[in-house]
Amino acid sequence: MSDIRPVDQLLNKYAESHQNPVNEWIHFICVPAIMWTVLGLIWAIHPLLALVSALLALGYYAYLSISFAIGMGVMAGVILGILSLMPPAIVLPSAVGVFVVAWIFQFIGHKIEGKKPSFFEDVRFLLIGPLFVLGFLYRRLHISY
Figure 1 (tube, one colour):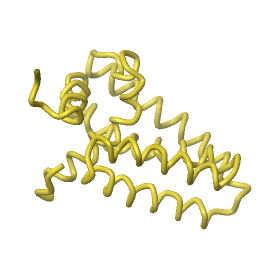
Figure 2 (figure 1 turned 90 degrees about the horizontal axis):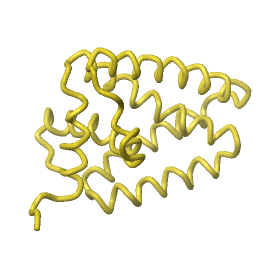
Figure 3 (figure 1 turned 90 degrees about the vertical axis):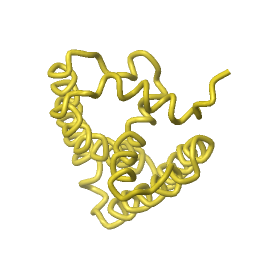
Figure 4 (figure 1 turned 30 degrees about the horizontal axis):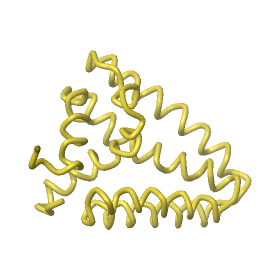
C-alpha cells in the first residue's frame, strides 16, 4: 500500500512528460489559457453551464487537495469574471482562437520534450495540468498542497 497521496501520484506521473524547461514554460502559459478557453467555450453556450462545469471540476480538486481546490477556485473565479466582462459576441471567437493557438504550442512543447501529452494515457491529466502549474506557484510561495 502506498503512502503517497493520489494528488502527488498524479502530479508525479504528469511531471514525467514535463521535464524540459521549454515545455514547462509553454505549459505555464498555455494551460491557464486553455482553462480560459474551455470555460469560454462553455460560457458561449450558457454562462450558468460554465459555472456548473467549474464547480464540478472544483469538486474533483477538493477530493484531491483542499489547498489546490482553493487555488483553482480563485483561478476559476477570475476566469469567469473576465468572461462576464467580455462582450458576448467576442467570447466564442476569442476562445476558439486562443484554444487553437495554445494547443499548437502545447504540442510543440511535447515535440521538444520528446514525449506525448499525458492525457493520451489518462484523460484525468486534462484536469491535472492546471494543478501542475498551480503546484509550481505554490512551491514558489511556500504554500503546501
